[in-house]
Every structure is written in structure tokens, then in C-alpha cells.
Image (cartoon, rainbow, N blue to C red; front, side):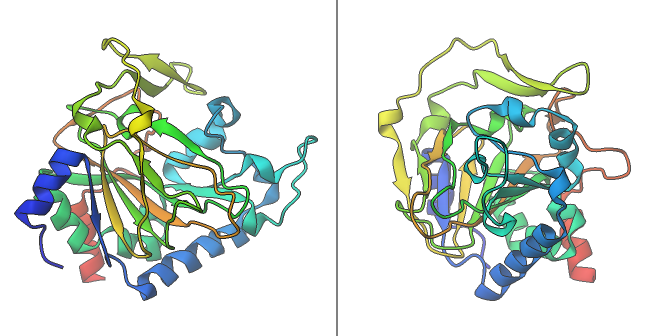
Length: 293
């Protein structure tokens, strides 16, 4: 795959996002989907946790924090009744799997560390890109939860800020099944106002304010961003984006990687921390490993 054109690079820096069609082949998508289904099959129901986009307290525990270095499953809130009993088969009730599949699952590793993505990251200005987080998001039919407007640097923070999301459509993402919504150029307009951190007790997390004065996002500017299966969407870490609930009868799977620059400082109070035995791996190292395996 060729490097980005000057126009694509300019558009990314101007708009805060860039769509690259036909990034993954159907065969590569099938590999990721099969791996996700394998992880679901292996998941023990005794470990059930709910991933909520409205109330993060549901997952602020060791299970969530340990997902930084595991392949953990999180369920849709609406998959449970008022008594907390699962009312759907787990295969259609899981919201996402995260957050270290790119370094733990060989099939995910091969796709996460594609040379083309490494070259794309270099093209948009990264000097030493490193993948710090991966997610397989299901956006299940009829119950796929909304994702509230946010910026990724709130959760993936470096100094200076270098976060970029590589959001890859495993299926067609439409307005009906909850495609991305973005505010073009918002990465240039709104300073980061809060951060999601690991508290000093090491057992919980919270949001903490930054020194920037609060500025309300103009959510009327959110624009739907439908994309075809296999498309890669690059999202600047400070771009305001969201997605609506999926109330259609079609799922909206996506594979998402969050990438930072190793030359920046990884904040010691970021919620996402890796143990010494599983350090972050540079994309260059990952590409070399995949190509030599």
C-alpha cells in the first residue's frame, strides 16, 4: 500500500480524520472476526462485566484495569434484565473485547502490525509509533449502546498529546447501525478538559480536570461518517466524535487500535498500564516480528 498523498495528509491535519477505503481485505476481516468469536467462546460467564458509555463506575474495578494487558469481554447493558440476569446468548450480548489483543493474539498481531499502517502513521507525523490499546467492538443489533461525544486523548494521554485512533470497519458502518459521528476540525478548536486516570489506590479510576477552562462542544456540528467494510478511519486524538445507539437489526463490528508516539511521555497515572513482562511494543518492532514469522 502506498504512502498517503500530500492531499490526504493535509486533509487529516485539517479535518482531524481521514477515510482510507479498502484497507483490509475480506480475508483479513474474516481472520479478526474468527479470533473474536474464539475469545467469546472461551469467555467464562462467571467473569461477566458490563461496559457502559454513560456510567463508567460499572467497570472501575480490577477486571477493567487488568484488561490493559488481557483480552477481556465487556457486555452491553441492555443484555441484562433488571435483576442482572443475562437475557441473550453471550455471542450477541458482548459490547467489545479489549485491550491487548494486538500483543496477545497472533492473528490480531499480524493485522495490527501491518507495514502499511506503520507507514501511514509515519506519514501523518509520528516518529516512533506504538500501539497501546486494541478493541474489537460489536455494536450489537438492536441493543448496541451509544458512545457519547468524547476525545480519545482523555483516555490515552501523552505529553505532548500524540494519540491517533485507527478505526477499521469490519462491516459496513451506516447511519442506521450506528456509524461514527465527527465534528470536523474540532481537534483544532477544543483543548482537552479532563483526563481519565488510575487513582493512587491502584484499584479505581476517575476523571480529573485539566488546567484548561471548560468549553462546551457544539454537538450540532456532529456529522455522520458512514464507511464501507474494510475502510480505515484515522481519528486525531483530540477530535470530538461519537456514535449513536444501534437500533437496527444489523451489527456494526469494528477493530480499533490506539497509537501514540514513543518519543512522548506516557503519563504515569494513565488508567492503562502494562506490567514489565508485557511492555508496549513499537510498531517498527511489531512489523519486523510479523514479517519474520
